[in-house]
Structure formats: structure tokens, C-alpha cells
Amino acid sequence: MAKLTIGCFSSLVGSMSLDFAVKLAETAVEKGHEVDFWMSGNATMLSKKGQKSFKDYSYLDKRIRAAMDKGMNMCACEACAEARGYHKEDTFDHPKFIRKSMDWYLASCHTADRVLHIGGE
Amino acid sequence: MKLGVFVSDYQTAVNTLDRLKSDTLGIFLVQNGVYHATIAENGKGSALLDAAPRIYALREDLETRGFAADAVDSRVKVVGYGDVVDLIFSDYPKLAWL
Image (cartoon, rainbow over all chains, first blue to last red; front, side, top):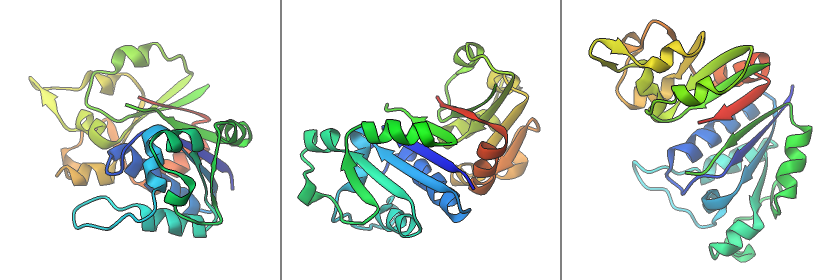
């Protein structure tokens, strides 16, 4: 098994890129690969706690928690979150989730077998 | 170098692809990029389909947009998320997102 690092710099919850990134990540986890998932920019929205599920609307909270339960590591850019008013108390709790600087992403890329960097819009 | 490029929008990305140097280029059509695999203008398919020897389109994104597999250009292979993960690790050491 190998390691995939996904860096998602877009986008707001409900965007196609974020949906794609999460589905790719959870598929890789299901296949037994190690996955690091970095959220930067508006993608840090995904770490907001208290997200609700609505019919016909993207709801990734439950899926990323399931992926983290299976070992996926998630990290949100702390500066990006703070800049958007999401403080530590506003983000969800999970042992596989942390907030760090971009150093975390760079270190993850360095040790990854594959890196998919999804840029912002 | 083998390079896998994810194309996520229905825009002409051929100029960008031309500037990417690789021994083997594979294109993954995802999100609105799958329209490249299905839409023909004036009877001609997207120029992007001539840009790489291996082109894949994500089944889920095709179906979300109402396209069945038989609507896809014959040069395109329809794949699922599991196939994408396998291809990433087996065939494409370097990845890019357009």
C-alpha cells in the first residue's frame, strides 16, 4: 500500500472540487492506502463543526469522519481558518484532525508516493 | 515521466497541456471536464481528446450529468473512483490539476 497526499485549496462546502477530493480520499482509504488530506483557503470550511445535512445538498461531514475513523489524516490550515473566523472552538473534534501551518502539507508531500494538489479557483 | 492531468472544467485546456512535458500523458476528465468526452461541436469532438493517448472520464460525474457510457467518445475510457486510485498509483507518478 502507498501514501496519497491530497491538497485541496478550494472550495466552499458544496463545491465540486471538495466533493471530488473527499470521494477520492475515501476510496483510497477503502483500498488500504494511507491518505493525508490538507485543506487550505476556503476548503477549511470543511472543518467547521455543526454542519447539517440537507436533501440534495452536499454533506461531507459524516463521510470525512468515517474516513478518519479508518485512518485518514486531515489537517486544516490554521491561518486560513482563523482568517475566515473559524477558531479552534469552531472546528470539529477528531483524533485524526488537526490544525497546523502549511509545513504539515509540505512534510506530507515529501513523504507521499503521490500528491494531488487541487488549486483554488 | 508519466503525468496524469485532471481536467475539471469544460474549457479548452489544450494550450496548457501542450506545455506540459511528459513521456506518457493521461487525462482524467472529472466534474464538468467530462463534457469533453460527450459533446461534439459541428460533428467534431473536443480537441482535448487528441491531446493524450490515454483519456479517462469519471463515471459518477458522467451519470450525474445524465450521460450514459454509450454517449462517451470512443477514445475515452469510463472509470470509477476505484479505478482512478489504482491508475494514480500504478501509472502516474506525477499528477496535475487543471
